[in-house]
Amino acid sequence: MKNKEIEKVKQDFMNSLQDPDIPEDEGNGEVEMGKNIWGLLTIESVGIDLPVATGGNFKSLYNSLIAYETDVLPPDKGNFVVAGHNGSCPVCTFRYLHDVNIGDEVFLQSKKQTMKYEIYDSFFVMNDDLWVLDPIEDESTLTLLTCRYSSWTNPERLIVRARLVEVIDN
Image (cartoon, rainbow, N blue to C red; front, side):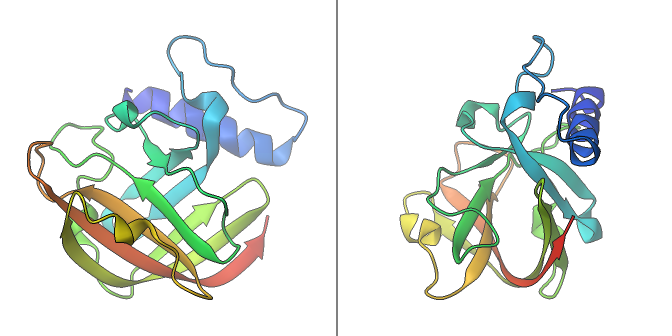
């Protein structure tokens, strides 16, 4: 997805916050993920400001952030996991995720609320370490996941974990 298409999806999402009667984008061949947008993820410290799609296809990681299917959505207690592609292309969604620091803020905006998270951990696992998808008991957490390097052939994954610290109604 080109940068201007990502901006259109973000603008459509923001417009839907102001007028809930605006129908969700059904996709026009250019913006296929528009109808699946759940919210926006922003990490100002590393310049990430991108739409998060649900019910998506992980083949779309070059184009969007994709939320894993989950029984719980933020801000409910559980682990909301979002994956993005790491690479050097201009629209590789998590290419600067490795630059975050403990204490950095992450904002996850849904149509109803904005959730403020604080990063508390960053580590590497192998691609078959699925325990990182599990919820952390009695917490509302956000887990961001990407390849360690900009190559899908490397089996290591970067995991960034954040805890919910504030919920603001939109």
